[in-house]
Amino acid sequence: MVSATGVSFLKGMLVGSTCCVFITMFGQINMRHRGRTQDHAHHHLRLPHTKDFLNISEVQRMELSKNIRIYCIILGESNDEHYWAVLKETWTKHCDKAELYNTKNDNLFNKENDKWTQMRKTYQHVFEKHGDNYSWFFLAHPTTFAVIENLKYLLFTKDASQPFYLGHTATSGDLKYVTMKGGIVLSMETLKRLNSFLNKTKKCAEQRAFWESSADMQLAVCLKYVGVLAENAEDSEGRAIFNTKPIAHLIRETMSNNRQPVVEGCCSDMAVTFSRLTPQKMTVMMYGVYRLRAFGHYFNDTLIFLPPNGSEND
Image (cartoon, rainbow, N blue to C red; front, side, top):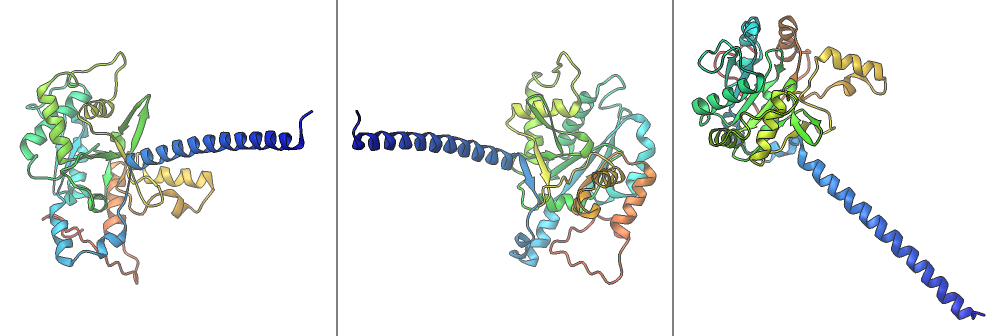
């Protein structure tokens, strides 16, 4: 027979062993959870907090406004030229410089070039001509509408001499990439690395998989070679600010879900892009973003991004 002391000892051993197992399990779960959180934070960029602006002087604010210079690249097809007249009169006026690149740019590519060839040749051309004059490079479809002031606000606390590659991310297998539907933002350092890599090797430039990858996916593959990973940009509520759909589509989706008020649930009030717009809808967006004001509302921005010459009336 086992004595009472022996029984107590065995119970103590059993309880102690069980506790050790649970502590170990929860410790491993917590460590894995922390790992996921750190990885999540690394690949998701949040808008800066307003308090960051309040701690700098007016002189510094104005200097920052001048130094965040964005070169806008509109990459389309030859049949997208009817968009260019509207683009020149709407949001691209707020870029520090904007240019249209399509298959009619005979000195860069021809009609036989695929989308990836057009994209990489455009990036190489832009770097050679303008790489030292701008800190950020924004690539978009002709059907994209962008609020450049909100993009500059996102980039306010980011250093363009560091490798940034951001927008609306998507995944394909193990590859995480920024989809061109929402627009692609590269820092000066990222464009520099990409250009250097493309000039040194054809390992990435002529790469073809057994399926035809999209141009934005192939860009992500190239940037991984030079140590630059895709980062998703979102507001403080975790909402996307680079949208791959038109605003009307996003509102309809929110209404059908019916889980939260449309205004709060639909879109970020600091959204940078909306996609798949017609020229007419682009003009409507321009009116809503830059012209329409509710009487009695006063907006006192802590950071003012002065529009380039030629867009004072917006």
